[in-house]
Image (tube, rainbow, N blue to C red; front, side):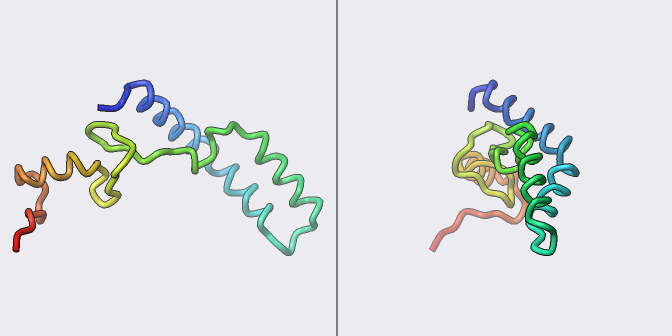
Length: 101
């Protein structure tokens, strides 16, 4: 089980990303648009830098829904490998069986 503070910190980041998503996307589109004047693109980048750091989507860490483990995360199931194996062995994940040959 991950530290509760780490899990909560990641949740706060998700909330901030959602709050600033529109503004961030608009500024990023201006900053990457080659047809816009270079000065305007620079201003857009400076405004992006003024946004809170945790409003950047890359700061979100994928964590296991059950344990909060940050590593060995399977996106398809949204859980870590340890819990995936445990739940699959118990038969709680539909369509997943233990491999044998």
